[in-house]
Length: 255
Image (cartoon, rainbow, N blue to C red):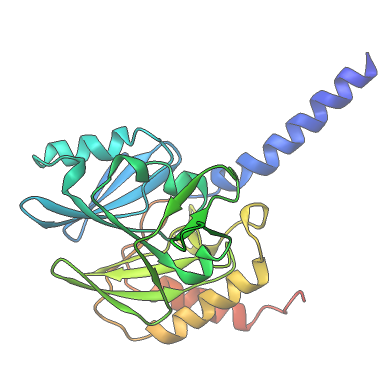
């Protein structure tokens, strides 16, 4: 029977590695209003909904649920339906961020070109493919580059490449919010933390990307809130990002 105990210990340890990092984060709210936009919780992940007009909205990511129930419920609160979503900006292509894309057939889906290279259709249409579910792919209407400015309704969205969590991870500055996907999170002490190593393609690159993003945004007074994929938003402007970068400058590089 010793082998049963060994298997149980191994499974418990593996589960701890996966679940543990989430326990250190400030929990996602069920729903949050953030500077005229809405953070919608879908299990352990969030999607951002930006109203663009009476019957027009944009999403940042599309959650884990293929039926997009939480997002559709928020749209219904506003008298809108799935066809009113005109744009979806993907921070990256993990399955818990692209799950609901198919429920919004009228949306122009966009992601960084670096995230799209892994899967391109035979017709030449760029696509992104989930790391965790290789069968799950999403066609893109447009690929983006670092530094692009994209007109999304009344918003000029600023595009930032933050590779590390995935090769094509992106952050988007929309209005007063900076959507960072899984590149960072807020811990229980209110500090910005890099993506946990267990979920990250390249942890060193992830941290360096955050430092570079802090350098680019230092002094940016337009951004009021940092928004994350798996933790509550931080409402201190870019200060937490700058503080993270300062702490990195005093930490020896493990590489």
